[in-house]
Length: 112
Length: 117
Image (tube, rainbow over all chains, first blue to last red; front, side, top):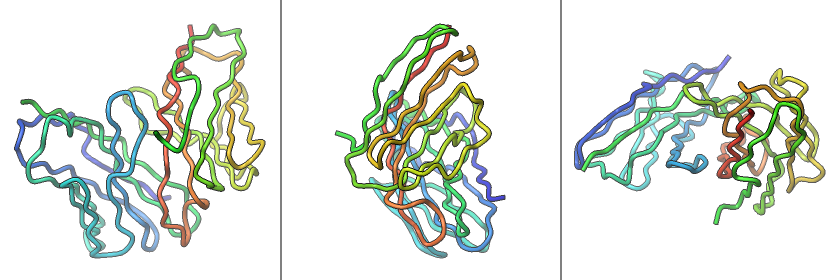
């Protein structure tokens, strides 16, 4: 079945550092890909998404590009802030009626 | 304010108690989901409802009993739980059932933190 793999962390960075969180997937066909973020004490919220190959999703300075050839959807941000400290989940929505599949989440801590 | 509201936010119960978690969405969505989030484990899909009909039960023990009286409300009835059931229970909704041509997102509530003593 479909699956998502991502680096589990935790990832600890200093403020203004560059962030990359790797995500790769296994799926039949062309799934839609998502990054969700969970701030402390809250539920998950959509950060960005891409629905077809070579699409780039972006939001709040975060970006991720749908790479079909490497089955990847890595999350990047050029300069992180303390307020970006959260858990980040990579996810896919499969083509053939598969419900959302989430990766294990990556905890990010940004230090001032 | 989130469009998906969960109550209670925190719940402590004994193993012999019966309690319920409630989820309400104000987004006009037709699909609703229960997820379980435990420490150091991936998010686990428990149940899926589409237009009030259950479309998925992910091998969840019978001590968890879902109920979906309409497309806006979803309940999770709890009875004779075990300490390992302690977790954050997340409700989500989407305009249509995920997958296929539906590229829409899931909208999550803030979760109900359950502790079983």
